[in-house]
Length: 376
Ligand SMILES: Cc1ncc(COP(=O)(O)O)c(C=O)c1O
Image 1 (tube, rainbow, N blue to C red):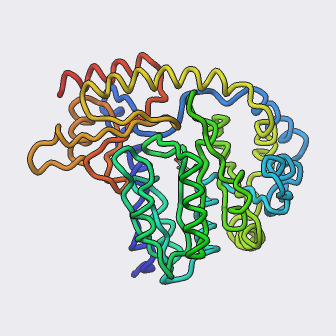
Image 2 (cartoon, rainbow, N blue to C red):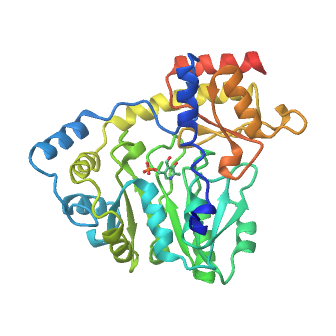
Image 3 (tube, protein in one colour):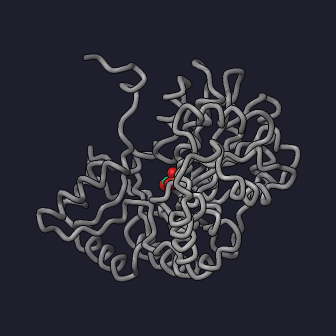
């Protein structure tokens, strides 16, 4: 039987595709080091687990408000000056937030500008909304190429999606970039979707700029955040959208037919993570050490820009490729020969690169680079 055309236009997430492959190799007795999945090894903090268990035991196990439990939305809204809790929608992770946003703002024939390299799901999510992703390469330092973005913008542009700190490059965009984007978005009347899944992961002396602080941008800004990385809650599936105007209500309508509320007791876990997050300081210090170590090791093998946030490196591996070899072939060869799993740049719309997640223990990281050095 035939499937729908829109499903034929997308592939499964290439990072998710690594999971069965690695399981397979492990079952065959291989010692695989996973630098492919974007999930730090930190344990979910005790206060989050305790709040979730309390919620479960006290019967927070029923349907609740579609856009999220009131106490959580209130706490989240407090971080967005001028925004009430009715403008927050709690979603099943940032992933569902982004999927729903494109469903809510795009019509067939619309275009969404994607600065590349970019996260694996943006293009598929835009396509599933019937719109066309328009890839615009970033500069070689991984910052946005504003002139190229201005050339790509036009009457069909519905939105641009920006992700700072960035997956896969670790780039953090400065205030000036958001001011320029705000001007361009006003001139061309489009939304700015700001994926801030790594909002809490910026290494001093660098600082994350929060576009919500630009008051004249708020009417066209849609912010997406997540508890997945910030509180080691990847399995809880809790993220959220903050947006002015009609967007939150549209998302709520969509969500009321799609999935209803996010798991109620998981939202109480998120509530415990939504205020102070005392674990973050130690996590950042540890990740910063790993970042420096991984950067030094990577630069001995490939060309690599220093990341300022998130927990990835995105080296240019082109000088290591054999004639006719793609970075996809290269990643597969390295996985099979060394047991080190990394994601090829093709997954992020930028062949010739690898994404390395360094949020693993120091010993594993050292072992991985040792294996790579021997092979290369
Ligand atoms: C840039 C980016 N956006 C969104 C997500 C989705 O995160 P969540 O677990 O909140 O769905 C990820 C996950 O890796 C990501 O890297």
